[in-house]
Image 1: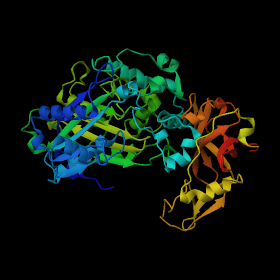
Image 2: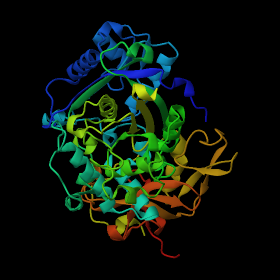
Image 3: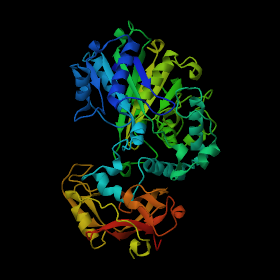
Image 4: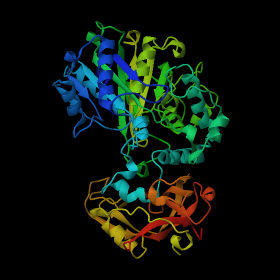
Length: 396
Length: 145
């Protein structure tokens, strides 16, 4: 594996914004929300739309998302990227942006996302184009859809089933991940679910796809966010302290769950190792982690695959609440996709919170002295993994 | 015995389309024969069928009979239908089955109570008719070890 050590500290996230509501709903179209986030994130950085020369979008309506977004914004970028890997798209975008910035191909990059599935459902819409209703001659239609796997929870349930059988992981252990998410959410006034829950509450919630229950599953809310990147050099003259991109890594292993080589091991083994090697850091150097918590099992697998605990030990690792406030491995400090927001894709929010933690902007949920943060996106059905390690100026 | 013999009346299943590469698989299903695609260059089975081997990109591919025996790799009970065509069948088991030949298939395990379908269960293929004469491969507990 070639490690791109040359990228370490070359680029920085300099502006962030996100919009969520405890009601789970936001006013306005996805276009309006996405543009509002871009405006806010640029303002956060002290930049303007005229500075932007790179646009990243994976969902903007039309045949080519980044073209549509740039047209809407009225800009003519010299770097364009519509990469779509599901919820990890935004971590992949950061990797691409950081590489382009390090090579001098890009000055200022904007990455944005908005989704309003909750409002859409209420209006009688479908929320998202569901994989289960996707028409046409696809491998999924031919080899998965006839069997009625509930999506996406069924795919993750299969992974949980295998992990439990192979390593003795229990539903109680996985439930603790949801309990800790609520403990963080209680300190986040914008979180959708701020009420505290117990392991027993998780186990008593309705079965969605065994062994996963309702409270093992992420939310469906509206939400939007954006991040702005530029060079570390330019970042030093901007409004807020930069979050330097210390290392990145990406790996996808499959598209459909039935093609995943090993349901207990994700591509995060590779993406994490790449990111840590590029950063010259290891798991013990990370102060705060933001892991894509589509389901409780997702967090458990990522903790193992990123090296925060040995393979198979995830259940025992999380069982005592180490992920929660005051724990030894603070994780998902917004409340995550389980309790904060989950508008179809959560990857942008992982980045926004990681940056805010490094800036010390998080109020009651601030992890004291956070210098290194790890944001990890998981896209598809444990398909596409992307790791971004960020650090303060002190880590440069 | 086909799985449909003892199943309650249910809506017609979502019927899988047929990709050009997998036509021999579905043709064999008309006679309730399970076949798998193999690469003649690297002598390994391929699932799902492709136009080229996903290991060596070889195009010398052929279909060979499969034993129909396998082991449950992972399983999940669906308390609600995953799509409209499964309404009335819940609760049912969706499982990944590792076939003897060395490939993995998504399927349903039928004919026993859902909670009895565990990782490691030995299973064998059974068939449910589709409307066009094809059959859908499902799995049931193996009748002999």
